[in-house]
Length: 252
Image (cartoon, rainbow, N blue to C red; front, top):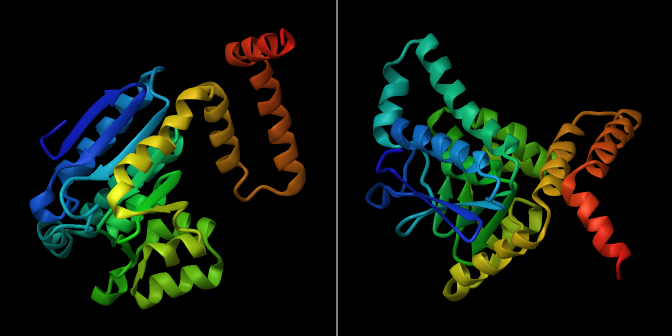
């Protein structure tokens, strides 16, 4: 991992900090690649119960940096395709990680930064945080992010967010379903730690199976979703955590 990312694990919680505060944690190739590497590292560890992504400095992430935008303007269609696929891989890694991936958003989360937060399983925001998908203002499209945003909010809300490009505050983001919880700025870090610590007490195998099934059900009809549930229910019964949990419950 490069200096663009700070990665550490403490008490079963992996924290990935975007570390370009002077650039408002703008995304570039090195940061995206290091972020993917950190996610893979966290996912390999059976001791990690949750993964937190946050930003150093005053903002969570302001989107692509100027050098990345310049690269887009100068690249061929094949080069741009490969670049877009790299970002797609990041979003897929977040979805496929066994542990919950939590975005802790303070300051601004704009464009690719809003996309990164939206891609996480849970979004926690400081009251002063702001979110926006302003890509259309420069003729760009938040294309891959829409695959996630459309699943988080209503169709009309998604349309409004990605076509007007306006910023919304944390309270509005919570109201429409982009954000799970909003905390006061003064206690934000404390509240995030308290919220995430709840995953320490929950079975990782159960959470992992639940996460996989929840996202797998996207696009399934009712019968297919029920059948997928049968398969996961059966697998869960055979896990060590479930066997131990049942034994402990029966001893009460």
